[in-house]
Image 1 (cartoon, rainbow, N blue to C red):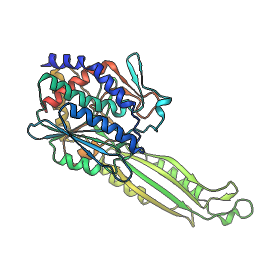
Image 2: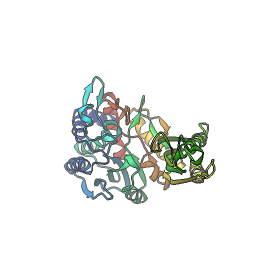
Image 3: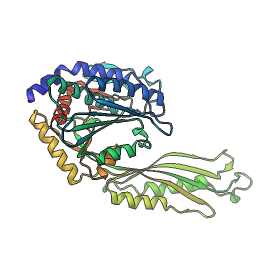
Image 4: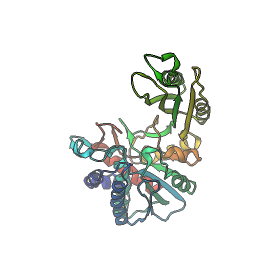
Length: 378
């Protein structure tokens, strides 16, 4: 069995690379629903070729469509999750083209996570060629808005997860050994607005109340909430304020990113940030927002699924370590529901959201063989 899977995967690497190139060459930033739909239509065609039933679900609130495919007829359902949207704006290919560079393959969105989507579909094709079928019904969901927090797809992800005995997330694996993710931090997104009083900076500075100065002090308060020992981090990533250098600023605002390792931290930190009060006199502070994704904690359900997948990897001669990371995914939602979830099963490489984004060719055959084994056995 191991030899047959590895041999089939090795034979499919060139086809896998060709499919990845085809998908990367369709730029699909989250904010371009037409580009997202072009990518989804390509995936629809490829999934139909491997015998899957496919439904295109219209997007809402300005986002592109989602894709739901179904394959296999076994007992129970396993949900397989990915997203076709990327952080890269339309036109990025002009300066960051698809390119093979030795053992690396580069291109916008190739690592996060078009390579993982290609793995899913090539695994189904490989099993079909071997005359094998998935052990369970597979529901393959490819969304269009994961990179901005899944506002239009979260309910779809959660509904399908509740119907499933396990969730496999094909976000990228981590170098050097392709570690899968058994824990992810939760993410909170907040906006802090300060209102002061305008005044002439030269003639009447004492009559003003600087919103910018108040914002600066609030930023110091927020940054002090970071505690690396517990995994809590607060980052003020965007600030705006004022009108002219000679005017005491009447308004200022900041956008805040919160990362937490546990649900208890999420509840406590959300209360703290939403409860910020003015430091200076005659100013108002308003905070909006909240938790965008719950943390994916390494629960007993997650640990049990990981051990099962790790043993399947060992059957085909692979070592599959685990890792905890700070970034979030749709796996955060499914794990928080208590559904066994394993993340990071996609292609191996580095550079998500960065100019050096790439995947590593030497890992492709082993990763494809593992995906085929998971679909066949889980």
